[in-house]
Image 1 (cartoon, rainbow, N blue to C red):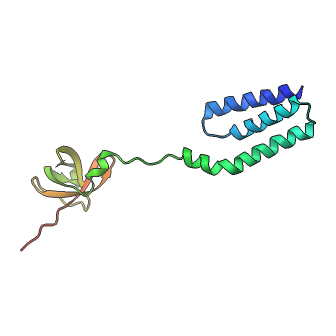
Image 2 (cartoon, rainbow, N blue to C red; image 1 turned 90 degrees about the vertical axis):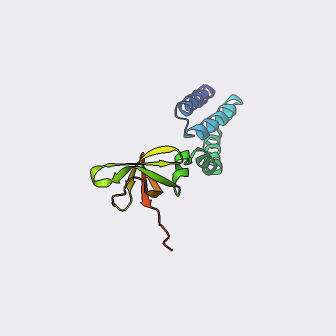
Length: 146
């Protein structure tokens, strides 16, 4: 009778794992499978429970760190990140107080804001410092005076 219980537990744990895809029950499912095999060969109940616990714990301890690393979301750089550090031309006066401003940077038009809240006139060259949402945060490009 216990072979059916262990097999049912194995199936339930696999279904839960398939629904969550977070590697939360897979170790216990393998432990239940080991116990079902022991029950199939008429192993005593204490052996079934011991196998379940030992197999589950060993799998958790040996693979959890690896699994967590594989499932961890890694930040992905976007093409927009390439704009940082690049120079552009102000196409609409940048005025943070009035929430307006635009920059042409590498052929792309961005809504822009000044990093230091200064007004930057049309035609000025600016440098992209960071991206805040969909806005390019810029500073005036340093001009060399001879």
